[in-house]
Length: 270
Image 1 (tube, one colour):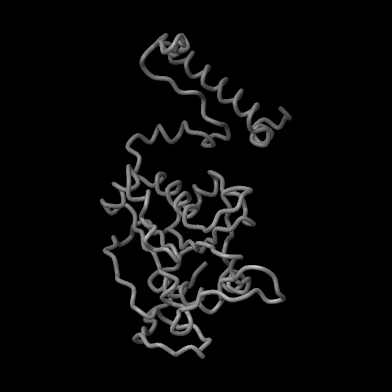
Image 2 (cartoon, rainbow, N blue to C red; image 1 turned 120 degrees about the horizontal axis):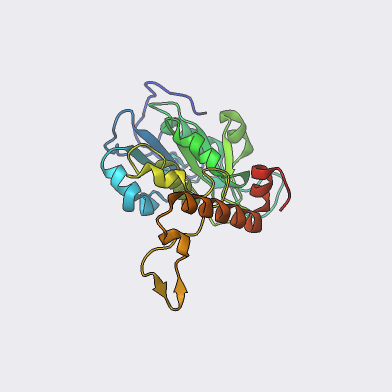
């Protein structure tokens, strides 16, 4: 959890020259405040590529909700907190090894800037984190928002993670070049659960993972396509039969494709 830093001083920009190895306690160029809506769920993303935002978050229902003030988004440019005139944000790993590691002093300054107005949960997008699931998304959506750290290079200095109690989250067992896409995925998943974002709340309740199962198959017109028909039960008008069919299909798909979810749901092996 990041701490609310009230009245943090913001000294003007200045370069310390090539020999300086200390990170700035404030950005070299002050961040431009974007219009925000008080009390709305807020996502702040610490990133080396602020131009990547809002990206897909500015589209469709989530983008409409952003424009309407149902949630706030702020991209915090990590480079502005870099050390020396080159604004260095990384250094070689202690103990040797390939790649570079994001510096603790630089990231610490960026975190304190992001937390200057309100305390928010801190999330670091990392392949070694706990796998993101719907329960976690629900927890994030029910809070005031979050500060997301987009990892780069070989990762983040462990001291920052320990100092701020940062929660590490992974999209799955694979490695990406950076955490920006993962951050957008997490934000999208959380924002769509906010009241008023998705018009029909019932559509959320029947989705995959909402009840521990994968979602049942969906169909729509035309009734016949390339010799394939919509299952008769779905056009029968018998709502009870439809509900039963959907439950059976959800259970079948979960049992076949996600044995881990099936065991948690039924207490039995597939």
